[in-house]
Image (cartoon, rainbow, N blue to C red; front, side):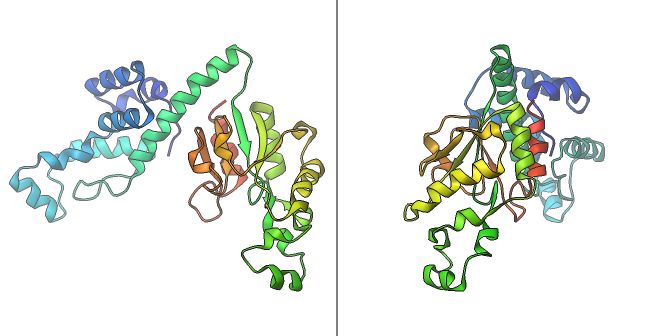
Length: 278
């Protein structure tokens, strides 16, 4: 999927659009609206082919039911070329959409457009966008700490409460690429570490501070925030491996750092994405 603004689509990819689509796209760009409304309007313009079946005649509907697209071949080829160009899945043999990649694309375009406008304003005022970075399983390799505790501790605390083992956070190493990624982010964004420390493990609160001092560069000095309510923080991005602790209510963009293919699998993925915003 490409990371584009509405302006970049108009300036660079207009050859994939009809005159009417260009006109409607400019109207969306000009008229401010809520995120959901703008993403929906954008999808209706850029990927109107996904509703072609709603205008099918009886014969057309029968063709689709047999797996045959009743639309002209030239039209279908043009549409699929556009979709490929934007990094969106092509239509099925019957002319149906196969996933929600077009929806995700439009949502990302709205975000990129919003971020670009905000970034321009910030640069004019000498400011930077705010980024919060989680610790556990994002900056920190949590498993590296588990690997160093005793079998007795594992038995005592059980698999679900190992974060309550005293001193466990002092044993953890950085995730691959985390330190370098944090350094890069700090050059281009206003970056803070936003983590949650276990309520029943007082040592964790101290150990997280010591971890930051040990592994992160001086730019992280006094930028550690520990909170169980991350949604209370105001900012543009949060890099976190979970949606808990208020992340799902964070007003900015959640960069979902995971290791299972559901989000940003590695720090390289995060930096590649963030480079599009500067």
